[in-house]
Image (tube, rainbow, N blue to C red; front, side, top):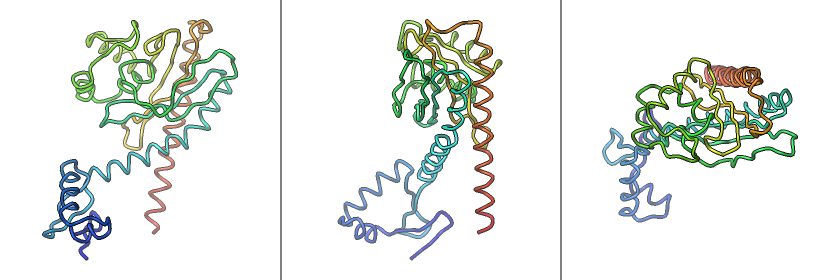
Amino acid sequence: MAHEAHGKCWGVRELGEHLELSPASAHRLLTALVENGLVEHSTTAGQYRLGSESFRLGLMLASHLDIRDVGTPVMAALVAQCNETAFLGMYDSMRMEVMFVGAVNSSHPLRYVVPLNEWFPVHAGASGLSIMAFLPKTEQQRIVAIKGLAALTPKTITEPDVLGKELARVRSRGYAISVGHRNLGAVAIAAPIFGTEGRVVGDLALSIPEPRFDRGTEKKLAALVMQHANEITARLAGRAIRSNRRETLK
């Protein structure tokens, strides 16, 4: 059976036998996968192999699992210092959306509980803004053009020029803060997390009920969030270095 640099190659009939499909059904399935970049034609006639999108998705999943594994103890350390709920956000560049993949709650009876594993727009709230501010300008423009700026609350930023100015402020100070942008009555402070190639991959955020939030503590809390977000970034880089070393030794 043919092998190439991108991995094992398969023929239509062979795949059909493994999947218990007729050759015609296997061919239709492969055609759909090719159209979405998950499978590509091999240089060998009649053969297929995994496409670049499959590898991208695999790398993205590994990166997201790393963020959660690495981020959880760091979130716990952050909450231990300020006793406010911390959330870990993950950004998907294909969806152009953010998902919370982890949380550590404060001990306060009054606290906001954000649903995990649900996608939400990057323009609404500090968590998304802290990511969007560090994306390439072209990607920011694509998000606005394709996803739009829908209002989740009356306080959500919905005007492109206002959003642009806010993103510039976030990038300048290194963190985002929002009051009621996604949930009325909730304050959020968030800082970006970067992957091994220097691209923003997620964020670390604190969520505070507005009645308990003191504006005088903003800079102190923001400094803590940035410190711990930087710690996650550093740990992700360290894990990547160790992984590369193991691969080199094989």
